[in-house]
Length: 221
Image (tube, rainbow, N blue to C red; front, side, top):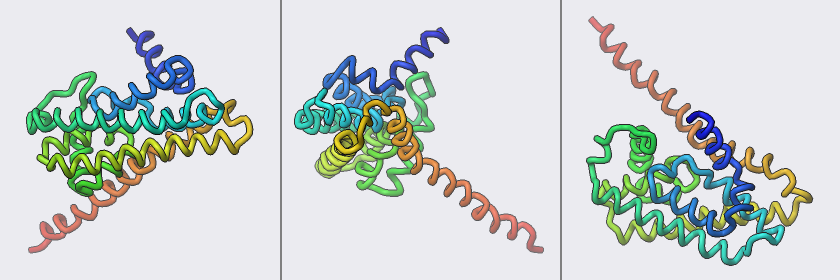
């Protein structure tokens, strides 16, 4: 079982190998699953798209089709996630943790949604894990579908185009970047995790500030 999990993790984390093996179809499938289904939270969305852009620059993938089909898959996945949340509603928050579902991820996405509102559907695209769970949160919160669709379309194109074009321009301007994709992937993963790190630090600093007034009130005679 452990060996199988190691093999599965290696396969998923090897985005260069994934694209070489599955091409355009696999890129579209991974983006759809990551944005539409709970168990897609661990998939390598950002690094996959940047690597796909590098492959486009090398002539292995058609850039035009990638920029059209992948945002469409991201948008379609959004709709699935929204209607899962709309139908399941508050029952999602009572669901027990499982291998494919983690309640803490859903609650993190809910906090993100409560803080940024509709803009979350755009901002969350660039935050791993949150981009998987924010769609059902929007559905469970009863966000108007017409408004949701507008943010969903804009977010899908901004995310996919920015990541793919970043990879494309790297591949076109940096010599032999395709031979050092692992370095590019490491940098992309680091940058994508920064918002989550900053948010965790901010929340940690808020807790002492909130507990200080409570302690001062208890010390009053």
